[in-house]
Image 1 (cartoon, rainbow, N blue to C red):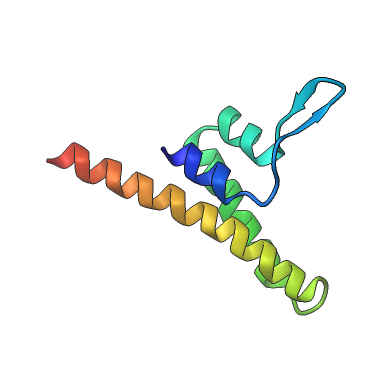
Image 2 (image 1 turned 60 degrees about the vertical axis):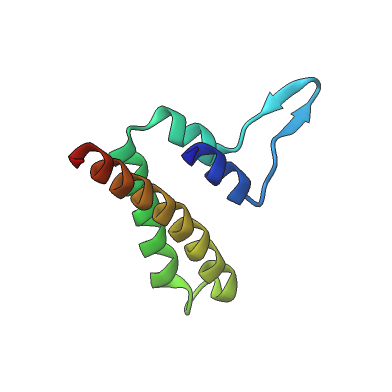
Length: 88
């Protein structure tokens, strides 16, 4: 369910190149990293883009910060829901 939420949230779709499916890097990272590693990656990018938007990327960096932030919100909401389900 969580993976589907993130995949539908993504602005980028899976593309096919010479018959080979190319996956988006964030989807691959989520599959290969532990939840803690992926959560840290997302947090780091939120911090990076909010810290530099005024001097480097402007609105584009703010949009990137929001994208990473929304992905982090989904992960945190799922973690909280899992914790509540385990405690009952």
